Length: 109
Image (cartoon, rainbow, N blue to C red; front, top):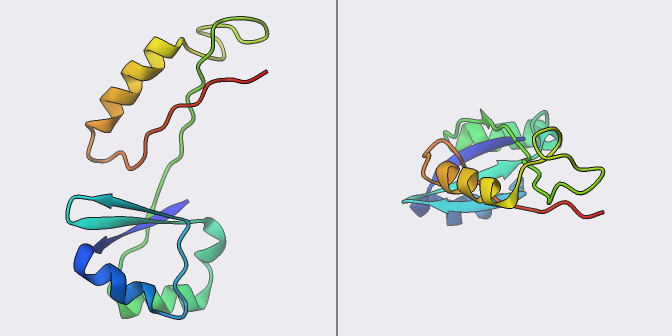
């Protein structure tokens, strides 16, 4: 996964570009974070659009944290954490400016 940062005043102009593609857009302060999947990165049209708009492509890291109640086959501390710990971690990550997206999901099954 990759992302670019776009000033709020440039995002509407960028969306008009015929080579524009976006997986997820996140508003953060006075700019938008645009997530791009890896399939678009080698695309010459996308790279040309980024260069034309003076945008820098940055690598994003996706991290999943699973929480559950400890019932089999999910063992707390081994392959999942408790929900209260997941909420605490989520709250801590949301205050970090380098973290783009934080979400929680419980284990089903």
